[in-house]
Image: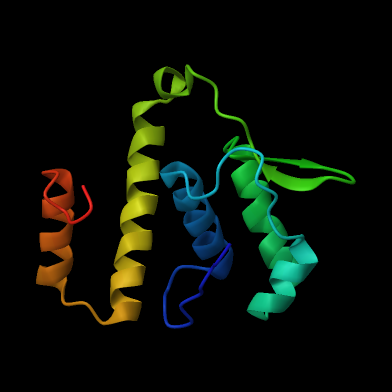
Length: 132
């Protein structure tokens, strides 16, 4: 699992972590049952306080995206077949916003111009992206 923080972003580090992990879960990059790194390990890897990563994990757990258990750690929660029907409009909007933020952060890190990023999104939505 790769999480990258943007030190120049006004978004707090815990929210950056939460949004990136949520986007990876939503996209299927982190399937159900995938074990997340231990809080202390991720905090050390990112150079953050343990409480910062713990907050991100608590937020993910509150959103029912992960489950934390003593001894087994934090794992991606199973998806139920009815999950999309149970999702509220606000939940859907929040997930979309998280995905967009993650995409925007990635394009900025890669130095991709806005018009090229928008063209890539448009092509993907139309099913015209390479590999589709």
